[in-house]
Image (tube, rainbow, N blue to C red):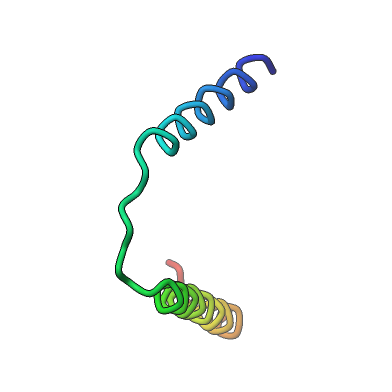
Amino acid sequence: MAITIVSIAVVQSAHWYRVLTNPLPVRATPVVIGQFVLFVSRLAFIIAGALFSLLLFRHLLEIDFA
């Protein structure tokens, strides 16, 4: 338990040291478009996974694994 707490403290301190000492440069890209692209890509992955699951379970008995 102590190792976990120390590990979390080290990671958090390193992260906040970097954030406070090296600010990120300002990007010119619109945030809304970036968030929309991320949303659509995740949605496409979910739909592809759902379609694969549907086809797998629908035709499971017809698949020959041998």
